[in-house]
Amino acid sequence: MKHIEVVAAIIEKEGQYFATQRGYGEFKGGWEFPGGKVEEGEGREEALKREIREELDTEIEIDNHLCTVQYDYETFHLTMHCYICHVISGELKLLEHQSAKWLDKENIDSVEWLPADIEVIELLKKY
Image 1 (cartoon, rainbow, N blue to C red):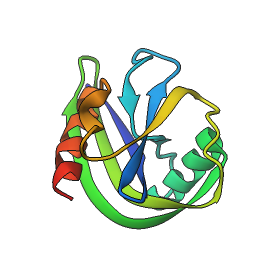
Image 2 (image 1 turned 90 degrees about the vertical axis):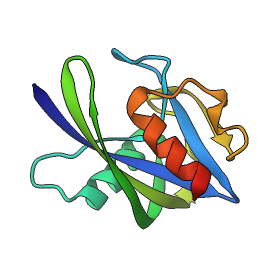
Image 3 (image 1 turned 180 degrees about the vertical axis):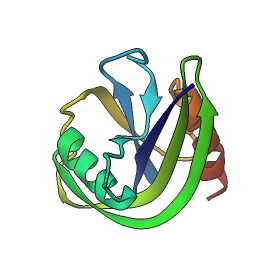
């Protein structure tokens, strides 16, 4: 089975988390935390900062590693490293996603999360 390693930014601001809706690909319309693939020779935190620049035209500061999720989709195995972050500059422009929302713990279940992100949601409810 194909293996994909990705990083995800859980961007936090005043008790809310930034969720994005995929605008392309097999999982179009599903909700996720922004991020993407780790390129060969790239560190995870470096990859995350690059991905957020590319997807949201924003600079982030990484506060801490929250968790690593292992999830088997039908056609590939996903390893997703999730980091709590905050914006240091930029305005979170949607360059690749079709929609975005700030969600707090009370309404974090109001969107249709992609399967791998559900474990992260459960952790954030306790965070």
